[in-house]
Image (tube, rainbow, N blue to C red; front, side):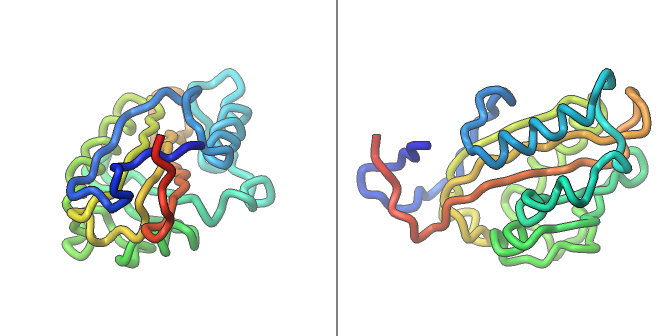
Length: 176
């Protein structure tokens, strides 16, 4: 993947991100995670949380977050946060809720809104972009993430699984 940045190669001031179609994801790990999720779907819109196999998930676990839906999307609880995910942000998340004031960042509200939309519609969502200087709790410069619904049937989402890949801030981007 060619990572583009400003000509100066410096971190941008403002974080920017763009939604992408699942089939347009570039990071091989994130693409494989989506492939695994799709195999679990079978004929359903999305798999159940219980369908996730810890052995099959082993290569993805450091890059994975599992959120439990609380009160039909009124909040989300971080049930599992992989090591790469923990290192990508300064804040510890495991066991906390998204609404916890300690989790506040400039992008808490957009993430919360996106998670609620995915929970309500059962539609996966992928995004990529640059973490700017305004996103001070992020230790990365570039990211690609996918949020995938999980639920007991085709109508109810009770968990979200997130897979993300990051490029660290000290990585010199390739200018294209």
